[in-house]
Picture 1 (cartoon, rainbow, N blue to C red):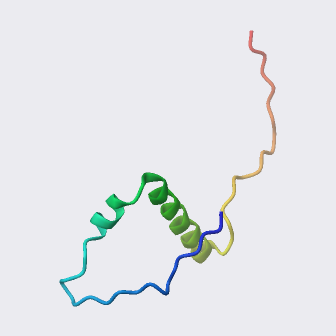
Picture 2: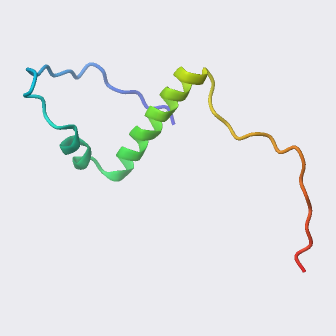
Length: 67
């Protein structure tokens, strides 16, 4: 899922007159909020660690009887 943020849509507000972020995020559907959060996490991990985070390898599989 490679979504890009449209950085061409910019509005300038005077200090103290900017709209509330809460109102914007509450107006978005929940799936859009989740997608935005996933994008933020991916960008942070890329900045912090330089690679995509993955699960660690499994070194040994233990078989158990279910009886």
